[in-house]
Each structure stands twice: as C-alpha cells, then as structure tokens.
Image (cartoon, rainbow, N blue to C red):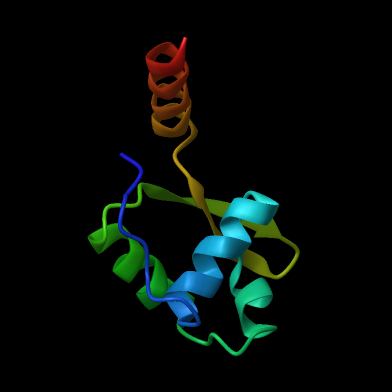
Length: 87
C-alpha cells in the first residue's frame, strides 16, 4: 500500500521518500550526500507510515550494500486501481 499521509516536509524522511520517487531507489551512499547517516532508520520510519519499501542487496567488489525501493507489485496495483477509478 502506498501511504496517503507523508512525512513532514523538510525532514530526512521526506527527502528520502522524494529521492526514491525521483530516482527509483536509494542507497546509503546516496543518503550520505544529503546528511542522512541512518538510512535504515529513516526507511523504517517510512514503512511505519505505510510506505511499502523493499530492501534489495546489491553486490559490489567490497561486499554488499542495501538498496531501497518501492515494492513494484504494490505500486503497479495502486496505479491500476487509480486508472480504473478514473476510467
């Protein structure tokens, strides 16, 4: 489910959410660029607000890191429901 009440504008949660919406996903390296050093905590906050964000492990030479994105199946169901409502 995509939450209807979003985080407070200007908060780290708001910035993280906006980043995912614009770029499709966020990594800890992305979040550090805007001063968010506890990305997992902000993602948990967003999940607690009702955003269905999934964690994908991304492998690289040094190991793995988390990549957070919206659950695409939920998003597609949500968009399809809105389209049938307006159609």
